[in-house]
Image (cartoon, rainbow, N blue to C red):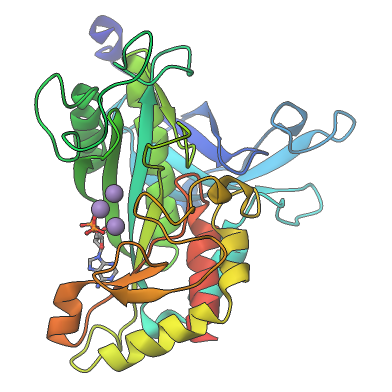
Length: 349
Ligand code: ADP
Ligand code: MN
Ligand code: MN
Ligand code: MN
């Protein structure tokens, strides 16, 4: 491929427009040639696609408009080529139901003086190209029980590290604020963290990191699953632990504000669960069982260093008396725009 990818582009640039489809969790995208390189989403034209093919409109009225909102360097095409995160709009100018960014942006703007920061821990599972068989699991039966895999090393402990490493570099190149990565408790399951990101930036960076991951895995004929409980039974599920702080929480004495925020969120447990996966809690119900480092979906709880609670206050933050806290409920297939908007609504309104 490099024979072709190294060819001169004659001054043109390629923009890969990305949007969230009708499932609220899958990413779609297509490429547009630009006459010259751009440095801001404002310089990019709006575009459209056939919404009847993405479960976002009917065949008779199929055009959906996509509006560029943030740009990243394209790690696959390099040079002046870019990835473009977009919002979806109906022809009458109203945001589509799957465009959760529109409302999220309004609430982030309203409370920007509080400088809400987020860090999301994206867990995911690698599957072979059928999308049905976890990568590297025995053809018949199961790997040995959980224990040796988390943060493990060695071909009998971890599967798919090439993808993890390629994804990490690709995110750094793109300008995605990736913060770390680790092998997870279930074999073929991994995590990376994105953050801290302020306000709307969290959703933009996480969605683009997901695109890059799926696109890197494609090079290896591997499928990325964001299912929150990909393998039923005694295997860990996959979440999107969301770490949160506001300006006040990050200052000396911030613990008081952390506790206040957690108690406000506790009064809205059901509203949060409804926003923490794309199926109103149905997907997450398979994961939040009270086992495998989760709290029951039916009950709100919090505690210091408690990984069996809905919300965990890190030990270090308790010691310091300020910092941030972790909402462990969001599912791996959550929409980070919906999650961060819900959190800011609960703690800042
Ligand atoms: P865990 O111990 O739960 O596995 P990780 O190290 O995986 O935690 O993730 C912690 C996340 O918290 C990182 O994404 C990091 O960017 C984020 N984070 C750190 N400090 C803050 C803060 N003050 N506000 C919000 N998020 C933060
Ligand atoms: Mn983590
Ligand atoms: Mn994890
Ligand atoms: Mn965590």
